[in-house]
Amino acid sequence: MPFEGYNPKAMDHFLNPRNTGEVRNPTHSASVRNAACGDMVKLTLRVENGLITEARAKTFGCAAAIASSSALTELIIGRGVEEVRGLKNSDVLALLGGLPEGKEACSVAAEDALREAFK
Ligand code: FES
Image (cartoon, rainbow, N blue to C red):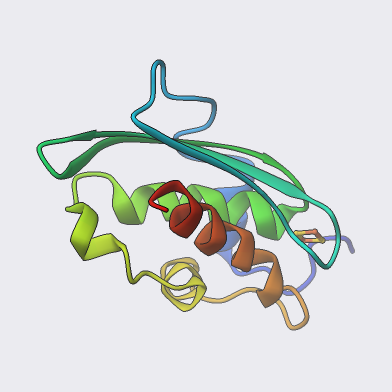
């Protein structure tokens, strides 16, 4: 069972990832690699007047990574840059209702991409 341990919310974000692709002419972007497995996340953003008006992610990774990127975009769209700067992968995990044991680290690239985008 490849998806054993995934709760329905996390599965939904994996099977129907939100905000995929790339923002056209982004104001901010970052491509990061998960150091543990080599999977990648590219995050592109449009920031207008301090607000994230658009966010899209392209994720080359496992189900947990795809679900995490999807959750991240939901967490940040419509919020202020200063407000989201401190977001952690624990916030992504909370939105997903958790990930299976051993897969929590797959959400770290989403946090890293956000931090990198605002460097
Ligand atoms: S195995 Fe690479 S991010 Fe999950």
